[in-house]
Each structure stands twice: as structure tokens, then as C-alpha cells.
Amino acid sequence: MIAKSLRLLLGSLLILGLLAGCAPVAAPAATDAGTAAGATPGVLVRAMTSEPAVIDPQGAPSSGLSLVLPYLFDTLVVRDVDNTILPSLAESWETSDDGLTVTMRLKPGVTFHDGTSLNAAAVQATFERFKETGMASPIYEGVTQIASIEAVDDTAVAFHFDQPAANFWSTVSMPYAAIISPASIEAAAAAGTGHLIGTGPFKLADWSAGQSLTLERNPDYAWGPATSENQGAPYLDQVVFKVIPDASTQLAALEAGEVDVIFINQPSHKQKLESDPNVTLHETVLNSLIYLGFNTQRSPFDEVAVRQAIAHAINKDEIVSLALGGLGQAAFAPLPPTLPGYDPSLKEYELGFDPERSRALLSEAGFEAAADGAWVRDGQPLQARLLTSTRPPNEAIATLIQSQLAAIGVQVEIQQLDGKAVMEATGKGEFDLLLWRYDWNDPDALNIFLSSARIGSTNRVGYSNPEVDALLDAGAHELDEAARNALYVQAQQLILQDAPWQPLYVPIDVLAIRNHVEGAKPGYMGRLLLNDATIVPQP
Image (cartoon, rainbow, N blue to C red):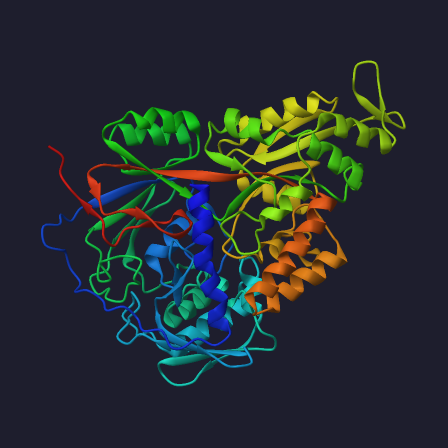
């Protein structure tokens, strides 16, 4: 799977070329709305670990929100599984020679779920609202690079920049950049609350808090992207997201036929379903990385030598084999192999498994080994609190890391909280070690998660290196792809030496789908594409 992903990386080389000045791209022809010949309408039920707080693409991210957004909203462009950019609400685009303006032509005949029409003013209103109120969004910085949005005419919108923005396409292809009905924006603002409305293939039909969200087919949908064969209205009547927080309960519901789709990241669950004749497993490698982070602003982890010592004590292959059951590949760089900027040459900078080197570094940092094997400096033992979320398989990974560090004399206490509590704790610096994951579609992930400007928010480890900041800033504005990649390679060399993170592994995630669902398939970043899906009665 990883080797395949490396091949897919070549497809991403086309993306930034668009910014240098692309010819208009013709949108694919949409098929007629309705049910295909022989297809059976029906209801698909998917398990959801947690529900969103509100349906607002520009709000704080959550797993529930990111799960439902692609069905309720559309973006201007989308990415295919090979990282290439495809038209969605925008049917074509042009970039000025200086890279400071991108002009998009919108598809005609698109309507929001409230019956209002998509036009350039709606796109302008969406991004102006984002710039004013979207600070909690993970793509906020990418949006703020847009100096202004101009409605050129009813169907053309221009994005103007003060500097070329290399990550513009990554920003506008994320579900958080969905285009919103201006009428719903005004209604929510007037009421102080309320769900926003998009143009997606499904509409929000019912929301039973803590139980389920029900989406119903949008019969008017006729503008889907080429990621599906059917670019008209979906065949399914409804999609129900059933809130089931516990992974084992989700598994039982799938086996009982109470849900049709679950997400798996526990090896034992995958092994159990591999022998189930009623279920098909779909593996996907995402633009994701699981890492062990260090609180670089808390002693003694504010010292490079101590961080390097801990990093050398981690056996990544053991984590992949024992904690993951092979559902991943050991990582050595801060970017996964699926993203531009990844380079195999970075392997030589890896702080690989070397317990003797760990002990030597701790000694060089002034720690002394006590009779019981523990390390002590100035009368204080070297110990750490490892913070992570309750999301599987974090407990298994954390326990193994605890064992590996104990082997070199470092005692670790594990603290597991829900995801929101972890984010709050890291924002306050209340941890020593952090087991965490990021998912992103552009090498600008390094800027989002490790730049000095993001300390206290997405830079959870408090890492700061002005030289790295300068390289990441240059990469954000470099439109020449080879030059941009070189900047990210340089930045990663420094990051690996500073060791704010110890990259652990690139995950292989699995979607388990009951066999009576046909036509559903994983898309970009593992999102389940449902426009071709039907429910077929089983004999």
C-alpha cells in the first residue's frame, strides 16, 4: 500500500503547476439525476464516533464534522485519490502570470438546499465570513492569505493575493472550504446559532442529539465532480450517521447488520472481519502521521539532547508489529510519503532505535544512573507524563512506549483523555510527551503544526526555530514545485535534528462495508464516496 502511495505522489506534481498559470479546465458532464437502471434505492447506516457541535464548515474541527461535510456541502475543487485537482463547483480556472490572482468560473444551474442559486457573490460571502470568524478552523491561515475576493460577474470570482500562495489549492479543496448559502449565513448570524446550508448531494433531514444524523437525497443535484461515475443525484434515499462512541460496539453493530459501514483502526477488529463473508474491507493510506511529541517548553524536554535520547529509545518496528498488527509503516520523516516534500534521503537524519545512544545522551545531559536504573539529575528523577486521546489504538501504542522507555530507565505515566480535552491540555502545555496524529493534504502541514506562530494552538509541542520558520514561510509562497519541495526537505532536516517530534508510523486505515452496499468506495483521504452507492438485497 505504501509503495502504491509513493507512486500516487507523482500525481500531486500537477497541482502546483496549476498555480503557475493553468488553462481553463473543462468540467465533466453530469449524468441525469435519479436512480441508475437496475439500482436499488435505500438507506445506508454508518457508525459515527462523535457528532459535530454544529453544521458549520468554518467552525472548530471535529471527526463528526469532517465526516458529514462532504455530503452536505461542495467545494470549488476536489482532489482525486492520486492528489490531482478536479473541478467541483468551479468548472474552470485561470491563474495570472504573477501568481497573484486566481479566477474561477462557476458551474451554471447550481442551487443551495434552501433553493437559492450559487453565484460569485455567494463564494465571496463564504470566504469573507471565513476571514472574519473562522479562526478556529485548521485552514484559517490558508484562507487569510487571500487578500481579497472579487465577484467579477455573476459566474466568475477572483481570488487576489499579496504574495503567491502555494497552498491555495490545498486550502480550497478541503471540506472546511465548502461554499455556504448566504441566506443561511444571515439567518444563523441573526439567530446567534443554526446550521449552515450547502449544495451537496444530501440534505440534513433529522438530527437526534447523541443518537443520529439523517441525511436525505438531494433530488436536484446535477453538478457532482468526476470522482464518481454518477455526477447527478445519489441513488441512496438516505444516509444515517449513528452515534456509537465505542469501537467494539461499532464492530458488534456491523456484525449484527445494524450499521453498514464502520472505520477500523484496531488490528483485532480487522482480523475478526477478514473471516466475515458479509463484509468487505477497504484499506487506504492517508496523508497522515502518528508521532510522539515533546513539550519543548518544559524541563527537561526543552533540551535537545533529552529529546534525542527519548527518541532513540523508541522501537517503531515493534510498535507497528505489536500495537498495530501491521496496520501501518514505520516513519522516519515529519511528512508522510504521500505528500510533496517527502524525500527518502531524510532517512539518514532519523533518530533510530539505539538504546545505548539514549543512555549516552542522558549522561551527556548531566543525568546519572541510579542503582535501580533510573536517571537522576540534581536530585530529580527523569520521568514523564504521556498524554494521548482515548481513540484506539492509542492505548496499545502508549503502553508499548511506556515499556520501551522503562527499558532505559525512564518512568512514564499514561494519561488518556477525550480528543477535545487533549487539545485543551496541550494548549496549556500540561504534558511532557504527546502521542498524536495529524492528517493534511499539503506539506504546509509542517507550518501548521510546527511553526512558531502556531504555538498555543496547532503547534502543540511549543517548538520554535527561526530558521525552520523562514523555510516554511518561503515554502508557502514558492510556486516552483521543485524549489518548494527542496525548502521542505531542508526544514525537515532541521526538525529531525531538533526532535520536537519522533515520527512513529504512517497509518493504514480500513473501511469495513457490508456486502449489500454496492458502489461505495474510498476516495481522497479515505472519505467514502456514495454517489454511486446502492443497497442490494442479499439472498
